[in-house]
Image 1 (cartoon, rainbow, N blue to C red):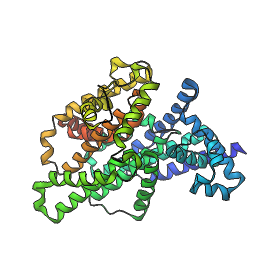
Image 2 (cartoon, one colour):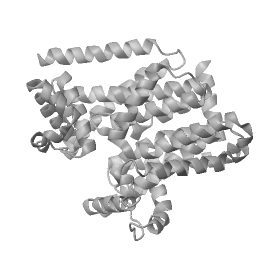
Image 3 (tube, one colour):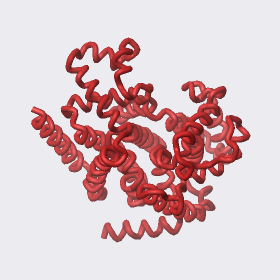
Image 4 (cartoon, helix red, strand yellow):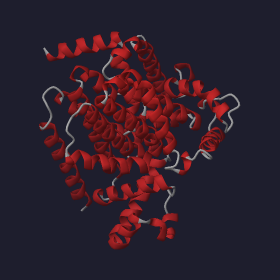
Length: 425
């Protein structure tokens, strides 16, 4: 019976992939199956890494919890439905699970649904979630190519083929679904800013992605939503009153600060009275459980605004470019170091194009990416100083920043444009 279920799962994924592939435009079809294959293999690599190297980890816990939840669904689907809606009445069952924190329990419920339709097979569950992650990345890639067809290769590198993003957004981990949700939100915002009509299907996908993303990665959305809403609002105001273009940066800053203040009331960890303490305590926990060579060392970090601001430049550098190659301590950290070196080169080359930012018709969108990336990567590095964990958490930043840098650097943009034209000939 289990073999039949797995066969049906593989057949269903294959049929969906083939159907979707046929609906793609000819200029992007060449990327479809390579990106999908690499994503599914990356999910398997995550499983192999945790099962056979670490021999423990959240992906294993989600798999085991998912099988328990699937058994619960089979035994009494009406009670299971109530559990999915509100788990507070099922404390005995919740305490039997390994992942009990709200965001982790939310993902365990997702794992339970996957276990139900895969007979609890880890590798099939991993493949399905990797496919979901691919759907999100491809949806955004296609939207970017429709809006900026001249930057197709840059979009492919940033959203489909960047190594750490591929690895840490695949398999049975929260980031797979979280990044897919973020990509759907970004794609909708790109469509709005470019004046495209949003279909009912896309609005439904946006609402669902907002729900999933907030439950899994609220700290990504806690910065992304104010940034995105600010940019859309200012662009809209600029269209109504073109004279505002002279003050658009000041207007953007004012609206963003207002929304950021409002955002501090939507989650307990964002409350002004708790925010700095949450960052500080998270930092202490990671420092306590990580050997010194594997963490970012800050200068007298304290839960105060002065201390956070003083350490912010070091956190920004660490979040984007560390571990450096010479700080590597195993093969994964060496690969991360090489990737960070490449990212550093791309960022430095992109700085040379900043003088053209004021003339760009997309300057507010670029500003949005820079603000979102800068704030999020700084807060992540301050609260999560462990290099390994940071590499995983920052995938919500890297693709957007990489795309902006690849397209913003005159030298890289010309080189990639030449490669794209050669590929079209």
